[in-house]
Length: 59
Image (cartoon, rainbow, N blue to C red; front, side):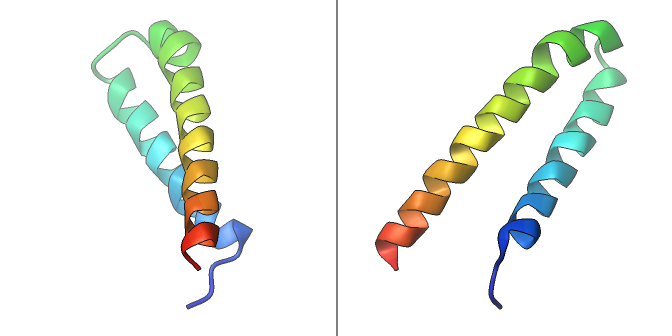
């Protein structure tokens, strides 16, 4: 299976959305949306591009 940008980012977005919904049931929504969600998005972008570059290096 060949991965393009959409097929690679879609599971990442689903994971972030599911984690955000799960955390809003435990923590206050204002804390989740103002502190947790931005850090999850930044971390996922950095991890995605580091993994992308590592995959290019390994190929």
